[in-house]
Image 1 (cartoon, rainbow, N blue to C red):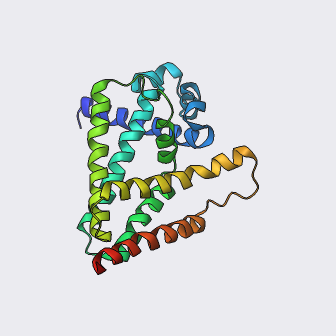
Image 2: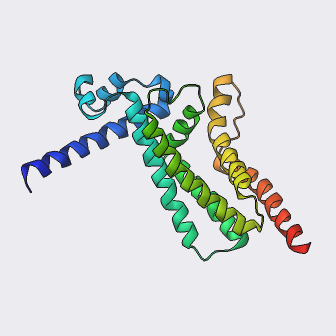
Length: 212
C-alpha cells in the first residue's frame, strides 16, 4: 500500500469516527444542541483538527443525510426485487422503516431537523439539487411499491402518508417527554398498532377497487 492510499484510508477512518460521534450527540442533544467542539471532544480531537475533515456542522449533517438516503435506497431496491405480494409486501415496507429506526434512529432526528426554517440555508444549490435528485428516486420507488401492493394509482399520496406516519411516531416520544407526559406510547408495539390501523385502510381500499 502506497503512502497516499494509506493516508486516504486514515482520513476516511477519521471521518467515520467523527460521524459516529455526531450520531451519539444528535440523539442526545438534537442537531441544534450538538456542537462541533463536543463532537471533536468525543473523538479526542481538537476542534481545529475536526475542521480538517468537515468544514462545519452543516457538512457533518449533510454527510449523515446522504448516508441515510443511500441506506433507505438500498432497502427499497431489495423490496423491489422481492417476490412478496399484497399484505406481506406491505408488512416488509413497514419493517424497513423499523429496521432503519432500530439501526439508525439519528436519521429521523436529521429528517425532523430539515423541517425547521432555514435548516439548509448554508448548503449550496448544487448540493440541494443532488439531495432532491436522490431522495426523489427513493420516493418514486416507494410510491411504485405502494401502487403495486394496493392496486391504487396515487402512490405519491400513499408514500407521503406512510412516511409521515412513521416519522411522526418516531419523533413523538421526545415531544411528549419534553412536555412532561408520563404516558409516551411510542414503542415498537405501539407503532405496530398504528400500522395495523393504516394497513386495514390501505388494503380495504384495494379490495373495493378490485370489486368495482
